[in-house]
Image (cartoon, rainbow, N blue to C red; front, side, top):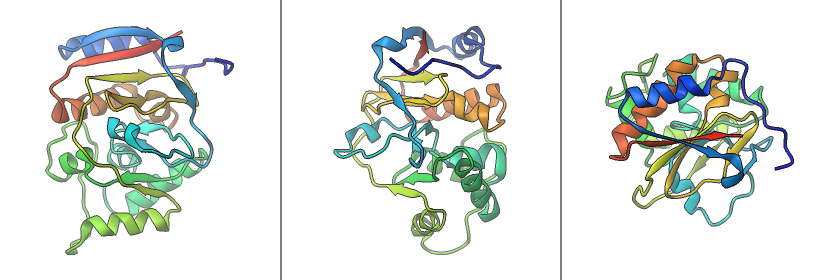
Length: 214
């Protein structure tokens, strides 16, 4: 890979390993040369960790991956109401990316039902009949993208990527998570890890993380 591999100054692979082991996960370190990493391209919409993104037939740009896409920023930092969503879109835009969500999002469902302990903010969607369509319209307002993905989850592990500006090509048998983006956004590393781990644990029975390393 021609791109220089750098991590956030506060990244500590041993801390990540201990965190997941402490939750009862199987931990494996995987060299980046064995993964298909690509640049998280400027102008790309943030994607969800959902492996079903790998089933898309046409991918123009690869965006960085967070639980619930840009919803993770609202849940962890800016707030779960309209003001918070607007702020989350601005946060991601200043880094050169766009807001993103997708239909049938497990993270959104869990957040809406109060099933995520790791979130900082409660979700407060407007009291209207068609909340799902409201989300779609908000993406357009922010200049973002609402992805349409379907089928059943097939993920067997979580790919944990700490390398700045890079993301793994989405694949249906892996959740994909770009830890560096949460760190750049100033979200505490343990809070970020708690959020992604809890999301996977609620959606899948698999407890394996592949931490990318040089």
